[in-house]
Image (tube, rainbow, N blue to C red):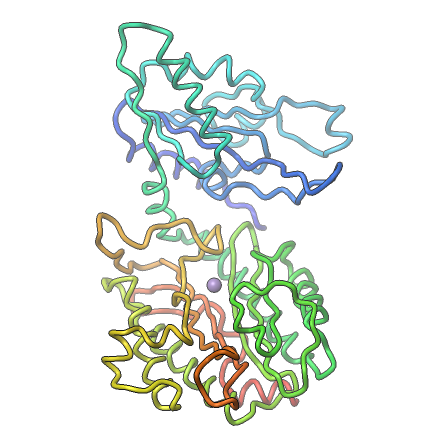
Length: 432
Ligand SMILES: [Mn+2]
């Protein structure tokens, strides 16, 4: 089962309502169906915040939640003719009952009904700036509501992203189960493709194998476009062409995760296509692995969520210095951020409904502190571009190692342990 119990969404709405100002209303929009090209659309994927509070997976829907806890869903009217083309739709009456909203209306009536419903409210919350077309609608509804009566206080429009972001930071047990499953599918898929990878296979071949394994193991969709980067293409952080040959002797960097019950996993491994690391490849790999392990150790309840970043900068800098790739004292390398020549992204991100989960890293200038049941990726990397001022033997090596880490009472738990990460484990699996 990938669907959460409806009571979970109802309880979240109650919790959100209890955090809203008195006499306020929250409006949230579903995702929209997006055209791909003539008569075809991208696969529909519900907006994460909308799903988080409704469990409802249809497009063209709006949730209205009041601070008194009552909720109204606006969604499509049931249409048997349309269902012959597009499949089942709930219709607003059935959706109201099934998803436990207090009221339901036809979405086509929203412009007519909503201004009167929000009239007289002190604060109207919405996720400002996420969806321009919805922002414009909200402003129109507010203007219509304000113009209904001369002698009334105008509605104060406020952004709601922090309240939802904070709730989403701490994963509920049911969410952790789904993320665990998503991580397990991704990890065993990585392991399986790593085992099958051979010289002569292209990036495209590997992409096909990863997507096939995800599906075979129970995930319908990847959680983002996979990155399959042979050789120096690993130094391009968002390389997604995935269409080149991989030379014998080259590493391949694979950043690929899947979605399960709308929850994401996110794993990166870097391995030699011929199953054997060269001396330089292994030396750089060990530095990245040490930084990965040190950054995981920095995930501790009560400590800043930026600690893994600082730890990785220190660990990678020391390693790069030991390899002779950076010169100067460790303090100088850190102060002048010289490591950025080789490490030019952040250590990781929150993980959940979104692969880069829509949750804050700081509030009022203060770092978020780790709490039990937060999930962050740890993904240090070293990328030695052809333009780097180093000996030629290092050039073209790009390595990243990424796992999904749960903060626990005792420390942390790696949710993606099924896929090998040590040099000898990888070589053994690939040569086996
Ligand atoms: Mn990631």
